[in-house]
Image 1 (tube, rainbow, N blue to C red):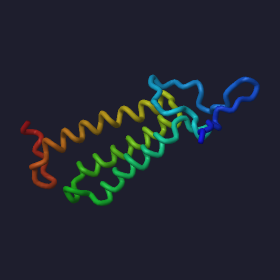
Image 2 (cartoon, rainbow, N blue to C red):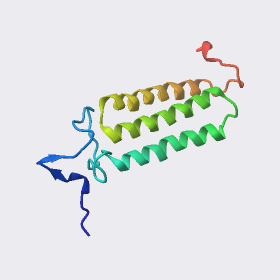
Image 3 (spheres, helix red, strand yellow):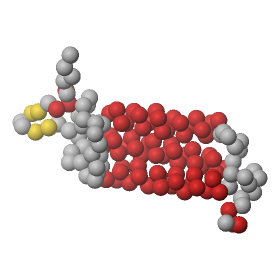
Image 4 (cartoon, one colour):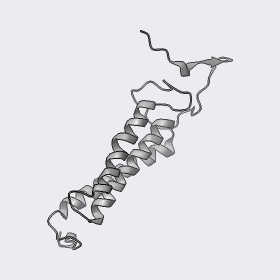
Length: 131
């Protein structure tokens, strides 16, 4: 069976792709507009939403392993934002959404480093000032 790329139909010699030209500085390995003329990389979109955002939501709902800690809730919230930003980037390949994908990743690194520094601190009592 041959997979037909239905999104690459042409009228008048031009592609009917909603988000062109792409302004992101990177184009990923997935075939662009494989399933629709409106979503550039559909598989990356659903995997970002289900993989990253859903994991972050589950973390916020379960709030594990440290119950009730704001730092953990913020970390999971940043993970949700990464998933949404990544889905927006892969939907459009636009530079604005590239920023909404990459900046929260940097914020997540800060959250994880802070959580590692505070892993032994009592609940609600930050010890980061001693470092």
